[in-house]
Structure formats: structure tokens, C-alpha cells
Length: 120
Length: 104
Image (cartoon, rainbow over all chains, first blue to last red; front, side, top):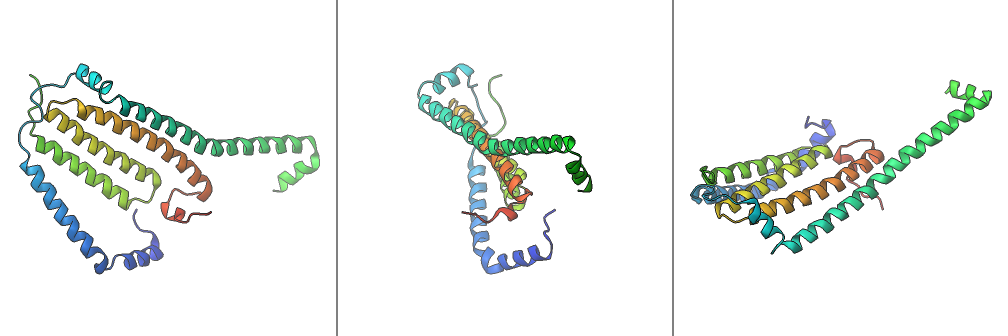
């Protein structure tokens, strides 16, 4: 699954010399130890009182209303962006299908191009 | 009974484990679909940590941040899947190593 053949192996050997990964690995181990220390120092149950839906709604449309507006703008931008990215691919599919249908109907009308299609 | 009696550290442990799984997938995988799925796993692990912390202090802020993270993830995946369409059409493959050159 992860092998890309000889070329990929050679390239990965070039990337993964010990001088390259030793420093980052040390830093990652230090960060992991810090994470374990901090998580083990946390105490107490997850919650003692339930957070009700009413509280969530009041806070969402109270102090956080600006964040809700920004999220709505972000979703709109995502919608427009994905439509723009996907539309051209879909349009091209439709155009190709149209062109194919057109050439097929032309080839049906004339026997010469029909023979060409058959040869291809 | 109100609330949960699981220790908070367990949930933080699960959250960091999920984050590690997502990051490993992000670095190991070459298929862009699986890269996007790993990104989703990472976002959801941070959201789990936010919800657990919000519940720990009895504040609704954690769940609100969870909703904001969900909307960010939705927008990201929408644009990402549009890019997947374009990459599939242009390179005829979903392998990200084929798409490492920018043209123009």
C-alpha cells in the first residue's frame, strides 16, 4: 500500500537520513512527554452538572453571535468555491457528452462517417 | 444523575490518540480522499477535547466551539472535494505525488 516502487524507495532513502529525522524526533518525544505529563495532572470527573441546550442557545446567539455570522460567511464561501470548482468539471462532462451525441447523430445520417466510426 | 463520571484525563487521552491517528494518516497516505478523511479525524479529535473541557467547567462554550469547528470542516471538505474533481480530471489519478507541480 505504501510502496511506490524502486524510484520511490530511493527518493525516500534520500529524504530519511538520520541527520534529517534525529532532531525532529527528539522534539516530538519531548512534546509527547509534556502531553502525557499534562494529561496525567488533570483530575476530576468530566462534568458534575449538565450543560442544557437552553444555555448553549443563549450563549450561541448572545456573546458568540459574531462568530455565528462569520461561520455563515465561511459556509457561503465554501458553497460558492466548491460550486465554482465542480461546475467546470461537470460542464466539461456535459459538453463532451453533447459532442459525442452530436457526432453519433451525424454519423448515423451519413454512411461514410458511419464506416469511419466502425473502423475506429 | 447529572453529568458524566469518567475522568477528564481519559477523554483527553482518547482525543490525543485520535489526533495522532489522523496525523499519521495525513503523513502516510497519498490518496487525497484519505488525506481529507484524516483531516476530518484530526478536526473531530480537537472538537472532542473542546466539548470535554466545556463540560468539565460547566460552560456551554465548548459545544459552541464544536459547532464552529463543524462548519469549518464542512466548508473545507466542500472545497476539498471540488479540488479532488479537478485533480482527477487533470492528472487522471488521485495520487498526490503526481500533483506536486504547480503550472502557471
